[in-house]
View 1 (cartoon, rainbow, N blue to C red):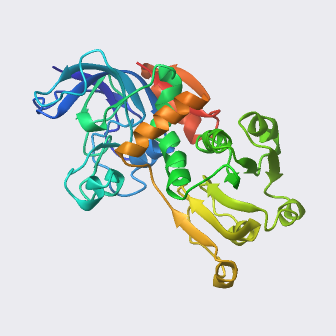
View 2 (view 1 turned 180 degrees about the vertical axis):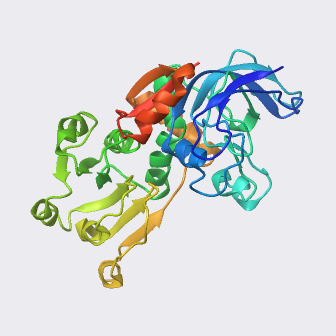
Length: 334
């Protein structure tokens, strides 16, 4: 079969129609007819080769929802017609210490869905069946798509670092990741504070689950909450005054990075030592975590706020993401 898609032929180029013939279906693989694919800022980094790892022609897209159309001979857990989702990762070695403990996202042989492998800005995608996750019936495909990257990215550290209902949680940056993080934190039963440099996002932040809103550019407002939060997850991509956020933490508090913030951290060690505070980072999650996240989102009605455009208008949709005009995730309908 031939697969119609949109690909970047070189760094920073617009996407153009691209037809490719996939390899013969392997025993462990499935073919998925795509219905929806979210746009993540990581897609833009790959298109532009910002990370110096991109391989062209590059078919972006790693927030994929679709229907299984064919299965390899060893696939027993999926069948034609099943609705599944595929995130950033579409393969791993399945044999290393990390794969054997459900941390496939840390596997050295992990295969990205859309680099060195054709991704989701297409009519079909081929993937390792173990990375095709059944989508709960309660989730609409258009809202489920962003959960497969943005959702798992903010959910996973909350689980890894033991967020509990009595914790007071802060979310920095109310965008594609942040608006989902607010919903998850609220669903965990936490008291949630939203941090944003855009005061006009206050009402939406409160509607997503925040109890409090702090204008992060207001020095007095920041100082007024020093020593009040147990955990802060930052989705920001701009360099901020991270020492101030460390001061916002209570003893044993943690500042966790999930956004691709540029630059280095300028945090005095003394701010961490005195009250046993921690700084950490995380990226996506393993297969068990992805399954848990989708079930949790379905149970607690965690919904990505989306704007939908047809696949043929992919360049217009990408421009909205580039210009920070998406509220809050762009999703392509195939």
